[in-house]
Amino acid sequence: MESPTSTPASERPDPRVDPAELARSIRTWAHALGFSGVAYCDALPRDDAADARSRETERRLRDWLDRGYHGTMEYMARHGMRRARPTELVPGTVTVIAVRMDYLPATADEDWVDASWAVLHDARRANVSRYAHGRDYHKVVRGRLQTLADRIADAIGPFGHRVFTDSAPVMEVELAERAGLGWRGKHTLLLSREGGSMFFLGELFVDLALPAGEPASDHCGTCTRCIDVCPTQAIVAPHVLDARRCISYLTIEHAGPIPVEFRRAIGNRIYGCDDCQLVCPWNRYAQRSPLADFDVRPIAGRTLVEVFGWTEADFLHHTEGSAMRRIGHERWLRNVAVALGNALAQAEGAERDAIIDALSTRRQDASPLVREHVEWALAQGHAALTAGL
Image (cartoon, rainbow, N blue to C red):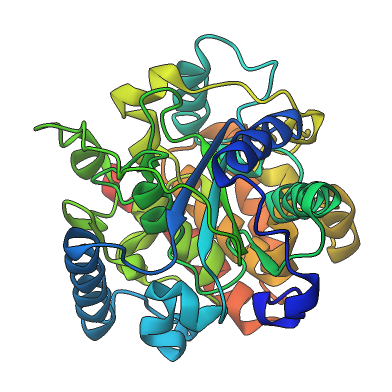
């Protein structure tokens, strides 16, 4: 356990280490590891303004939980206000080092946004959120953050630390915003003037005093494109997301049946949703990653009929090392069945027959969850025929 409290006082860093110089060195080491942004924030409020901000953050978190916007993600409610209090989450924390890692592959075309919309508008093809096109970011970001911690230790000696990247009840966007990496967009993701929102966040909680940055200012202005484009209207107010309506939540986090009222809106999105990012003007500045980890794997853009035919062994093979593997084969089939139903509603001729054949092969699937979504999908074809009479 790398908790700050685990380092004996006799082994703590030399107090003569210059915090400003160390902060500069950490940025240099982090950039060499593929992090495009590094900033620091105090674990505890340092003045009245920061204290007021912390109280407001907790108020918004409490209200969000009270409204049930976290859906079935019970761990969010279970950890409660600890998510907003770094020193309670990891006792002894003095500073949070917030990092950003871009994930657009180096080979991404200049018109990558148009290419993404093209896949979304082709009902036959499987659409996968851009962040999942490469290697599982949990492994990439966490591993490189730990390497950064080791590099710091090499320079100053043992110190208390803990690495996070979307793996614990950490309010990543809030910490990154406080550190100055960017501002919270109306879609709730962090936005950067230099890199849009196509990046991952990570944190290194440390027991070191480092010069904190200033919170970033908001640059969304009156723009509401992300709110307007959401297929399920999950962004219920600026900066407020009802996860229960969000396609990313429904196709990834949610384990049960996808509510019928959202199935048509899902379209061909079988893992996640990028719509709110694709319309954001700031993503014209999205940066390419220098890391081969995020090079595109040959999953996105395959036909729905093909990926629906994957056995569990096929699924595990094709998703090896990918974030997509975490949803498992059953949820994968559930998601693809919904997408096939949406494709069937507009298909004709041989294409229609191929979709019906694919769905029919799983009408007797061992999973009640899969069977339910297969029957719904087949019903979409019948409804389309009836409507056309």
